[in-house]
Image 1 (cartoon, rainbow, N blue to C red):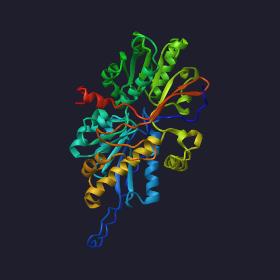
Image 2: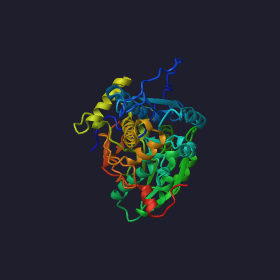
Image 3: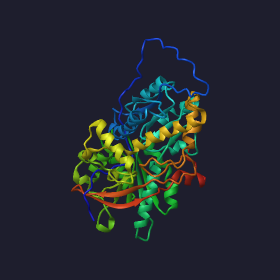
Image 4: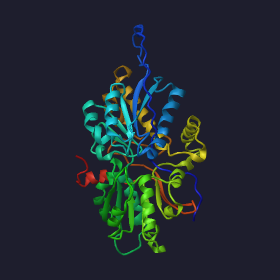
Length: 436
């Protein structure tokens, strides 16, 4: 049954304002020596957020990042930070420019104890050797980092990623498949770090009973047509196309598929194929495309969505959403995908707390956060999503749902899940290479 939905949106995010630490020319006054046994806390602790506030991925980055900053702002205002130590969050607008990422890293690495960037950012590809060399732990917010995390590097952490989303799509496909042959799947991937993760997926999909018939990459910026890739991907007649393309790519792909006469939806209803998009579907996205083009599209919400707002079982989500709207003057009906940002801030705060428990404020360094913070996060409940553990024992309790969109703006919920397959763990256990 069709039903009218409010905002349904995914994992995926970021905002970027350059917030520089305030420098003064006054000589610091010498503080009195601490009393024996007194805990000496720093005046503040720095963290860095590398965000594409401008550039080709702004639409996918800034909304979640606003949620991320909402959490830190609330924590500073209500609790004075972590254990009374304010968090100085430094935001660097990288504009999807590797030069800006590298210069920002060098500028701030000595002022912070952990860093954060988005899953669609080349930050990790570009800076991974430096993170390891400098013992700087980084958190991949909105989107995951298993291509580097598993087997663990010790310095890069992330949550759900697009390989696991494809695993969930596969479960739905197989659960609803009725023909006496294997379903044919093509992969249309965005050519950016998080978008390329499913390149590792074919062995997993094929082991589940799915035939992977084509794989194509779409440029992340400067794309004006996807016709060449679409012609190649349609030639083997896939039943399903799994994608990691982002909004600007999706607008082009849907327009060209519609122009080719391709109708999205179930084959048993006379349609041509099913197209899955990884990044939810909110009104901002809908405003960028023609209604006839999204008709029949399947979207994934890989996190708790706006419908949890006001749910008594999720009081912290309601609190964060209220603060989000208060801080940024965002009306409820225009709420952006922010929940992954809220959770990301909480996870980074928990890593800092755990490191302090181990080494004390006086010995807190980026290395301590990498060694004793993130790796010790086990069954951590943010109150926004299922408990999270950064280890190979993590059960991947990631909730989500699939829903179909219609030309008139209605949506139809297709399937919900409480746990996603952990594709990289499966690949590792089966002996497939997953990282350099």
